[in-house]
Image (spheres, rainbow, N blue to C red):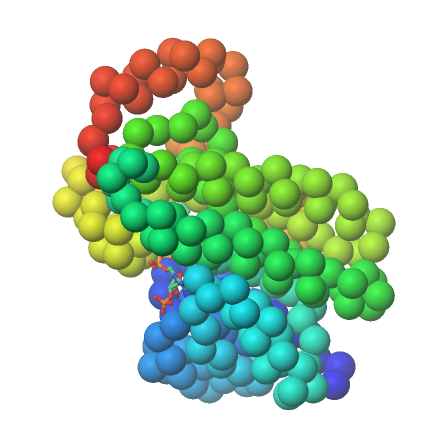
Length: 265
Ligand SMILES: NC(=O)c1ccc[n+]([C@@H]2O[C@H](COP(=O)([O-])OP(=O)(O)OC[C@H]3O[C@@H](n4cnc5c(N)ncnc54)[C@H](OP(=O)(O)O)[C@@H]3O)[C@@H](O)[C@H]2O)c1
């Protein structure tokens, strides 16, 4: 099988669905995974009709530790190896750390850090052997700015993805494998409905927002160009740059005054 295959996690909505369409438009066959099988099947049908590529769907809950292995076993059973991996699945867990259940935080760490790290670890040797690979870890602007109250581990898990991507980028650059951390700011998707902050998010100015298609397109281009980190949109680039030069204490003081405007505690 000579055709290249892209595996996209969290492909049932938002940025993941947009990424799957973009990869297919560039000739990749696509493997779509998430928990909602009906959504995956619908997108797979749309993509194969529109772009004429092969599609596979794998229903999996990345909170289950066995999920990365099951997903890749399913692809192997279909005779396929992964040439591009988009670690996109994610969500926000509202609340202050001490008020949440450890089981929920543990599942969050599994989905946001362990599963992407395991998937990358499993596909990397094959990519290096074939001297071609693309790994995009969908992080966030939240991973580049100081922490905030509420949604406690969100920024921490995204900072992990940024550092992880930078290290992997350096390790893999001579193997034909491009690794990029994609850092979107506010993006139109189901994200804020899922974490219950749609009302807070709706009060933010329109210029802070980008569409999922624009974010995924920026991520695709950054991976092609082998950029280790890609921040989407001019306002987010400015925020990321400011956070590199302004002392963290100032930003934390600002965040303390505005606590609760975006995050739910
Ligand atoms: N939207 C934003 O403002 C924004 C900003 C910065 C970064 N991001 C990041 O972008 C990524 C995509 O988010 P989005 O905005 O596209 O949100 P979304 O529309 O809510 O999509 C999230 C995707 O993740 C999947 N997912 C969630 N939990 C999962 C689990 N336990 N197992 C498997 N799949 C799971 C969902 O599928 P199922 O529910 O079908 O499983 C869905 O396909 C996330 O990593 C998010 O942190 C989003």
